[in-house]
Length: 301
Figure 1 (cartoon, rainbow, N blue to C red):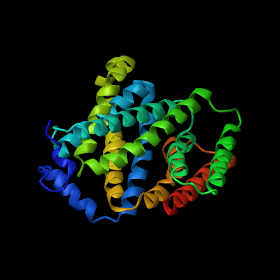
Figure 2 (cartoon, rainbow, N blue to C red):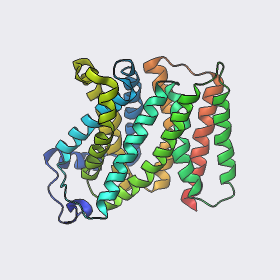
Figure 3 (cartoon, rainbow, N blue to C red):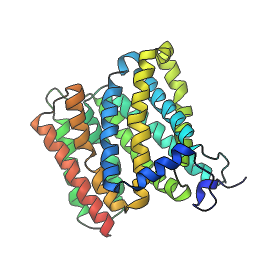
Figure 4 (cartoon, rainbow, N blue to C red):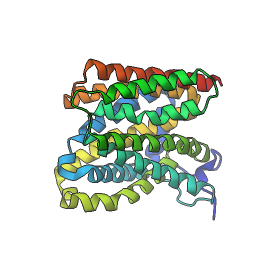
């Protein structure tokens, strides 16, 4: 089969008017601003998504999010669909990680607070950073992260064990997303690979969403909010992250992303009124500091 035209910057097909404009716009913004903006957009979108679970369920909301995001990205980037045998597994694997990560964390959101779920989920990228370094100091960062999770487990009244399990599963998928995302950035340019990967994720999740939510997927209110969620939680953050990863070292990207649990906790507080106790905020701080330390150590190594 012919190789995907996006695999090199030379000779790639036109990305479409909106895609070209997006590329130029991203290029004018400092990478740290791209990362932080995407992070805020993602977590605020997640808070809005949580409000739809009662109507469409976690699978249903995830299906709406991925489907709308895929449609928007495909229209914006108009990617070539012809791929060689090395590119297709990367794009498909990236889409599978997106599907697993989104559905797992949404099932966690149904059962435990947003900030708590994302803090546990962040063990995924933290593990990638720790395993990427051979420094003895990594043991300290791992213990600090474990302390944070232990503090979360001692929340008064306890956490739903199934919610914690889903958050841990999301952590596994997030680690896979990082690894596949790096390969995707190497194999493609622009947002075409992201668009096709998102479409793969939508195809994987949509049957489960239809079964769980039934006619709720046809409700105009659900679709309207779902479109907003798709833009805020998928189109904007993943596009910004992918562009930032092309322009800054992974270490710097990882340090910036280490703020994710704190941003999630703030989004839960502002949008959902999910107030965390002092012990939970301390747990979030432990995981954030552990992630920053492990990421910096990994980058130096």
